[in-house]
Length: 83
Image 1 (cartoon, helix red, strand yellow):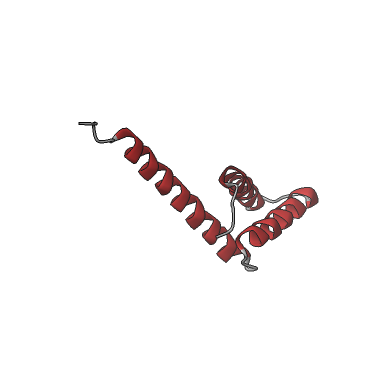
Image 2 (cartoon, one colour):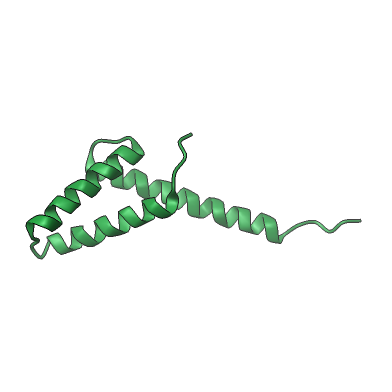
């Protein structure tokens, strides 16, 4: 399993979503270039070339990470008492 920096992955997805929303209103050349760069980077990180599939995979990974953190947190708070 590859090591993933989930904080950085979340930052990439958040920035991409922001630029995608702005692109519907029209965007400049720099914003368009940054969107392309983010799509490429996200694709490399998750190993999927198609931008929409890469974003979906990134969201799946982030959801799994959040679920895992919740489960670990629950396990840590519910410890059996020692006899």
